[in-house]
Image (cartoon, rainbow over the protein chains, first blue to last red):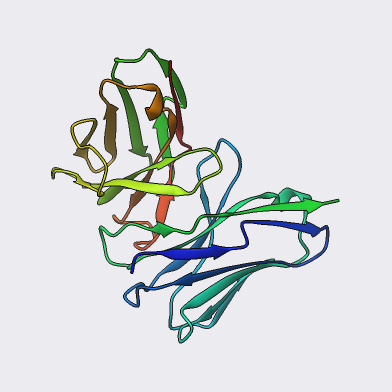
Length: 113
Length: 118
């Protein structure tokens, strides 16, 4: 019930290409789905987040697509750049105060120049 | 805005000693703070949730007597690793959520503390 499954584990994309990372959740009580970016030795930083009443959200080169019926959501990084090389984590939680994020296992993205 | 700091950024200690890690929300008052642990090339695992003035809620499998959490104010939480052993070596990350003047649903993460126990 509490798991968030993320794939792929690692991803290599050429500069300018599209990076796609997928996640699936089980708990239908989750109503907040963020994506975090983490560089080695640093804390995770919020990239973009979505609520289940929206099917897509775009911020710059980053887009979240959300499929409530399938309990799946994905991150698309358009025009991927070497600076995007990092580990990406999807997460899920309830929006209410005091509830923690449950993280996926992470995807290591390498963008080759 | 919404900056979370941790101190120290890295610490090396001898086996059997105790180490305290501080987590501060610098520009907002957080109603809830969380502590995570991350091993190399792994995900963040939630250790405990704490609210100001209340006892922390620990996740299953986390020893509350070994990982002492104190949440003294709306801007400060501390994690003390007592009688540290080499297997406690890890990256400890705190986060803060809630309070006024920030997005209520967002967890803001600190930069992490690297603990190495020799």
